[in-house]
Length: 401
Ligand SMILES: [Fe+2]
Image (cartoon, rainbow, N blue to C red; front, top):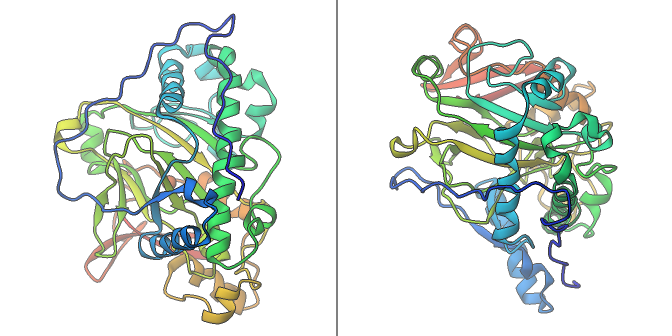
């Protein structure tokens, strides 16, 4: 393929841009046990003129998404300096957002969207138990209307928008090319047929998140959990690797493992849509946000995430054109794919992507919710393991806590 152009953002020095202090990455943990070993994919190899190099890359991706449902992506076109500038802007947001903007732009998850500012008091619009998590989420409506953006970020929207455009239209598109090739489909199959379009994030969203250390009472009621074990709803999630180790993935050994820090790397999650479209050949990543190791308990964790969403009206089903699926059939053992398949077999409609995404956002519960988070309410014991069991539109979802 023709070499992909690297990210070329607008200048940080344009007239009218206030000074933004440089974000200094915090120290990494000295803890080493209980960390996952993840495969790393060099995205620049997709540009190689040697077909053997590209074939080897596709095989590596195939194994990584089957084994882990999770991979590191490197050499994807954004330099460490460019990335740290985006972290500096996120840090600037939380240092400068006004109380008026927090109120004016307050999120309303009952709408099925995280759009806007999330206060650090749980995942409902009304204030609940403090969870120490602040977010700002850019959806289509934020990109369209500058008045929906905190005023302190107005001078930097050129850089943030360019960054999201590059992530969606270059990085994610190339990633979907890799995945299309694993399914033995044309390069743009997933980009053209499944990925949503129409704004820097399509029907997905971009997030600046800040996790502050929690109070003792919150840590006790949540048992150290910051965000429940879950899979993402969409196609792919691009998270930037950060020094504070809180992200954990569920391993084949049925235990949680921290994701190690790899400076500048992207951590890629497979979402439910890809699991279903791939007929279960790709595994949706089970992950959660947990307290960090002891030496990082008092550190703040800044995180940038892009959630790529599929077309909202699409009802998710395996890509029957895939020679891989035709040849090997679908892989039945996975949770959400199996549930969707059972529903289709009974002649019932499965949710559309938008419905699937919005119902989960609207009904999200907090890790501090001691009423819901117990056996007999949202939790069950399966083979001695504590699992979270929810049902959305007739589809049962069982996930490790
Ligand atoms: Fe997630």
